[in-house]
Image (cartoon, rainbow over all chains, first blue to last red):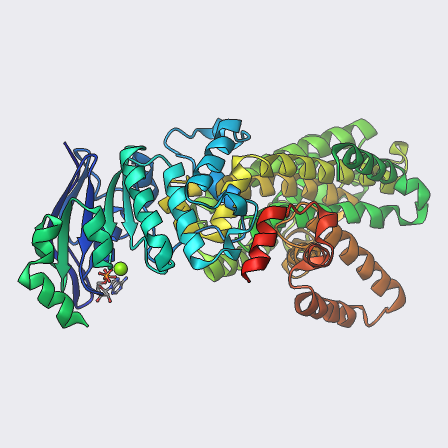
Amino acid sequence: MSMLQVSNASKSFGGVLANRDISIEVPEGKIIGLIGPNGSGKTTLFNSIVGYHPLDSGSVRFQGSEISKMIVPQIARLGLLRTFQQTRIYGKMTCVQNMQISIPHRNTNIGHMFAKLPPEVMEKADHLLDFVGLFSKRKLLAGDLSFGQQKLLEFAMALMNDPKLLLLDEPTAGINPTLINGLIDRLKRANADFGITLLVIEHNMRVIMNLAEHIYCLAHGELLAEGNPESVQNDQRVIDAYLGAH
Amino acid sequence: MTRNRKYVFYGLIFVLALAAPFLAPDYQTQLAFLWLMILFALTWDIMGGQMGYNSFGNVVFFGIGMYTTAVTQRNLYFEVEQYVSVSGLVDAVTPSQYVTGMFLGMGAGAILAVFIAFILGIGILGLRGHYFAICTLGLTIAAGETAGGIDYIGGGSGMVAPVFPLALGEKGIFFYYVLMTLAVMTFVVFQRLYSSQFGLAINAIRDDEDKAEAMGLHTTRYKAVAWCASAFFLGAAGGATGNLVGFIDPLDVAFAGSTFGVWMVLMAILGGKGTMWGPVIGAAVFHITQELFWTYLFGWQRVALGALIVIIVVFFPKGIMGFLHHHWPQLFGQTVDEASSSEREGKA
Ligand SMILES: Nc1ncnc2c1ncn2[C@@H]1O[C@H](COP(=O)(O)OP(=O)(O)O)[C@@H](O)[C@H]1O
Ligand SMILES: [Mg+2]
C-alpha cells in the first residue's frame, strides 16, 4: 500500500521554479531516498508535502487521502512528520521537556491540555533519549547541546511523536563522521522496530546507498532519475548533475 | 528545596502577608497596590515570559474589568441619569449593596475580559514577534480613546465608584485582602497550569513556534487559553482597583498604557521572565523602589524611574532570578545532572 503519493507537484518562488511536475511514491514500511545537488528543490518538496506552503499545482495523498489543502499541524497530527535541515529544537527547555511535549497530539482534547503528563510519557522519553545516546544529557537545556546532538534530539523527538511517515531533511549533515554509521543503524531500527516509513533527503551518497531501497534524484527542480541505489548511482545523468553542481 | 521546607517557606510568606496591613498600618493602600503589581507581572509573564508573546495590550482587560464593575454597581442601585448628575447619591449604597455590586461586577468584568481576549486573540494571536507587540500597543491606545468617547460610561471625564461604606471598616485593609486573594489565586492557578502539558506547550511556542506546529501542537488553542487566563485575573483585579481608587479615568487609571501597561513588562523582566517567582520578586522590588522614589526624590521620581528602567534592561537582562541562578545555581532548585555536566566539562 502507498503511504505517500505526490503527483505532478509544481512550486515556484517568483521566477524560480523550485519543483516542476514531480511525482514520487513512498510505499508503507520502506525507506526511500531523495537526493540531488544543492538547490535542486528537495527541501521545497518536503515543505509542500507537510503543508508549509501551498502547491502551485499537483496533489499530495497521504494514506489515500488528499492533504495538499491542509495546514501544517493538521498534517502532523495525521502522522506525517518532518525534521528540519537547519535542526529545530526548543532551546530553552531541557531535553526531557523537549521529548515530553513531542508526544502525539492526535487525540488531544481540552482535558489533556491541563493534565499532568502520565509516567509512561516520562519512561518513553528516557527510553528514546537512551536510544539516540543522549540519556546523560537529558536534564541539560537543548540549546546547550552541540549541533550534532541537537540533530539526534530532533530525531528522538520525532520518534516520540509516533509518526507513520517521517521525512528527514539531511539527518547526517553536521554530524561527526565517526557517528554517522551509528545514526544509519538507528534510522534502520526506527524503520524495522518501530515500523516508521522513512523518506530521507541525503547529500552524502554513501549514506543513502546504505539506507534506501529506492531513490529519487532531483536536479534543477525536476525529477532526473529514480531506481534502486545501484542503478541511480551509475546513472550518467545523476553523475553529471552531481559533478556539474560542484 | 525539599518538599517540607518548601511548605514551611510558603507558610511563612502567607502568614506575613496576612499580617502585613497590621504590621504597617500606614502603608495599607500601598501594600494593596503591591498585590496588584504582582498580579500585573504574573499575568503579563504568562504571555511575554512563558509564551514569548510580548503584549502591551494586557491593560485593556484591566480597564474592561474596571468599567464593567463600575457600571454593574451603578446600574444595580441607581438610575443612570441620577448617578451621573447627583453626586450625593453616590454614597447611598449600603455595605451589603457595595460588596454585592462589586463582586458581581468583578465576576462580570472577568468574564467579559475573557470573551474579548478570545475575540481579539482570534484576530491577532496569529501575528508573530514585533507585529504582535505593536498591534497590542494599538489596542491599548484604541481602548482608552474609545472609552473616553462613550457617554454611558462617563466619556472623557470618567466615572466615580460608589463611596466605600464606613461600616466595612478600613478601606485599605478591605482592598488589601481582596487584591491579595486575587494575586494568590493567580499564582496558584498559573503554577498549576505551568506544571501541565499547557506549560510545556507555551514554552515550546516561545522557543520555536514553527517547530511546535510541525510537531502537531494545537498552538492556536494554547495561545488563546494563555491570553484568556491573563484576561480573567486582570478583569477581576480591574474591578477591585476601580473601587479602591474611587475615580475611573479612561486614560490614567483604566487603560493606563504608559504606566501600568509598561510597568507590567518591566516588573516581569526585572524579576526574571518565564519563571514562577521572577514576576513576584520583580513586582515587589519595582513597587518598593518606586514608592521610595516618590517619598525621597519627589520632583525627580520620573527621572529616577527612567534611570531604573535603563538599569533593569542593561544590567539585569535576565532579571533577578537569572542573576541568582547564574551565581548560585544550586540554591534555586536547578537540576544539574552530575554525570552529564562533568562529561560536558571534559569535552569543552
Ligand atoms: N521560501 C523561498 N523563497 C524563495 N526561494 C526559495 C524558497 N525556498 C527555496 N527557494 C529556492 O528554491 C530552490 C530550491 O531550494 P531547496 O528546495 O531548498 O533546495 P535543496 O533542499 O535541494 O537544496 C533554490 O533555488 C532556492 O533558492
Ligand atoms: Mg535542502
